[in-house]
Length: 435
Image 1 (cartoon, rainbow, N blue to C red):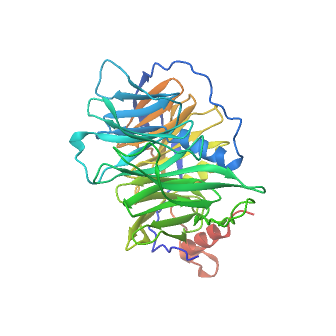
Image 2: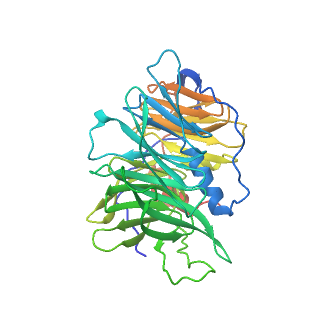
Image 3: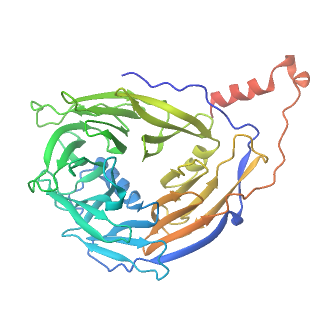
């Protein structure tokens, strides 16, 4: 399997650490979602690590925004919940679905006018898929619906609106052979006026659910997972497929232009901290040997993945590793700050302001913005939304916050033993890691 290569990386010089700075949080508002108590979903049939991982990813992605971030969309039980940020009355719109919601994704809309409304796709307990159009004033209508008969709990990775108003979707489920569990990934099509059952396009299998996925066109797309995906063979025995296990994360490119083809590419070494869709592909953050987070955009060019706009956020991976039960690591779209959410219930969400390429201080501010358990986050320019158990919190950040810190000068080369270069020595020690 070929490994994707990075070019030269720009580093942040003279950065030391993050410093607690409560003034980073400018303002905070809390909005109740008026959630009614429902029975917990039946989780007796969890198939092990693969489904547990899929369930955790679905919860962390249960908050999205529409119409230039003016509407927050989330769910609880069988209700899709929508709140207009410009609504001073703090009212919540609710759209009822016939079964409990399992997962939620935005529908990419490269062909349709946004005046007609943006859309989300939800998967339901029992295998239902519902595409819902949302207007600018948060009114909903069902675009199309279909049924997946192969699974009780389908999880969504990505969706795309076609020119004929059909929807392409990537759906996965946890499965098990006689000896091991695996993830079954399906590409399906929903028709606005089509049959009740989805149209299956292809099925692939891999060891882990996708971190994120993106449709480039209706015939081409890519995803990132902790392991590769290969097309399922009809002749596979009941013991289960041979899985493409890897030590590093994998980018899988799927192409359906003539025949269905899946190609796998190894990403640069490092554990996946986060992966999310952007307008042209995926934004990926990996742990880096320096203790920072390696960020890059993953895009397609002639059906081949390319790495672009690579940079390092110093110290970010080390901050993530210090959390007992890290649930969410997420970077703002403009890379101006990142957020860590701890699942231990002892510290909710913490924001870190990213140092610039030429910081005026050796320290950068950080602040705890929520002490409640946080299920999902959505990062916006200079603010963030937090989905808690009771509602949504909106935190506005002071992006000009600065922590005073003295830059530490390296010792002169003339004072080093044998005339060694101090900068080269530090880089060599960083590469050695910890004993």
